[in-house]
Image (cartoon, rainbow, N blue to C red; front, side, top):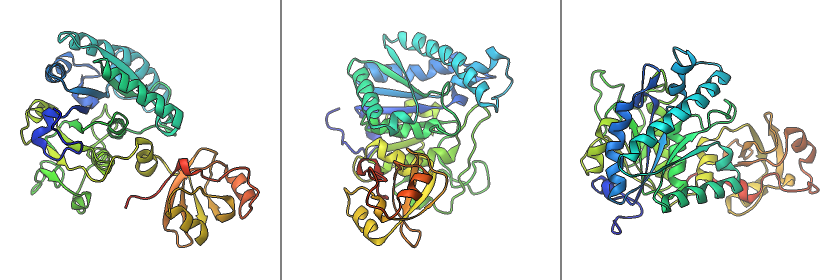
Length: 368
């Protein structure tokens, strides 16, 4: 496998990729609000042999909430976040036990990793998560990753496991990302509609302009095709090749067959933390800066100082993601604000602020 390119561009080599992240959704793992053990067994019958022949695999798995619905008496995914958390806490144990049993047939050990956005945004957490996952892989363990639905809220969450998988692919320095779904790839329109055709390969995301890409997925999931395309954008923008394919075609994909939609990688590797700030995190407010601050930020490596701030919009708390714009409203950068809205208004134009408004370590420039 040593001959595989770091930036994988040939899908025929996917089965030789040294390290891959695979995301599977709730609809592929559950049936009628409970775990479908036969479907989990079929998934493991592909991943188990791949692991045994030397591929390192990280599995980002949905299904914890769906697996907890039946034990708690819910007929469908509840709208209340507390009920979702309860279902997740009950269902996660069922999900991990199922994976433990199935992978044991191949002598493979799994490890559970539940993440929150803080684990990506906070630099110390990020380093800890990266080290922990790397160590599991070094020990021959398959990490089973999921968002920690038991503790996250609607205000602070990845939003879907597709984007989480794209970020995890960067955290573990994966060669490729595979997003599994119920359909056989990305279509030029809603599948089944007249004229809709399978898009086999995407070299540039601009190629998708004008196509109708649907949103919400199944009743038990949170994603949809739109979230998978956004996940592919996040992954490929940092150099990770991405395949969007049917769960049933996973074996064919690892055999090098032409299935699904292949998103070619672009650019160099980018830290997952930067990708989260740039593409996925919710902006809570806007900070307008003068030309001096704009030029300093665009040159790279500079922090945003209070003296360069001319206006503040939105309700911002310390630690929130803000969009930094020039006088024409054009985004210059994004970053984590060190101050609240009230503090920003008090320090605006002043040189006496106790620290930068946005430190250079917490700031990302737009993708070129």
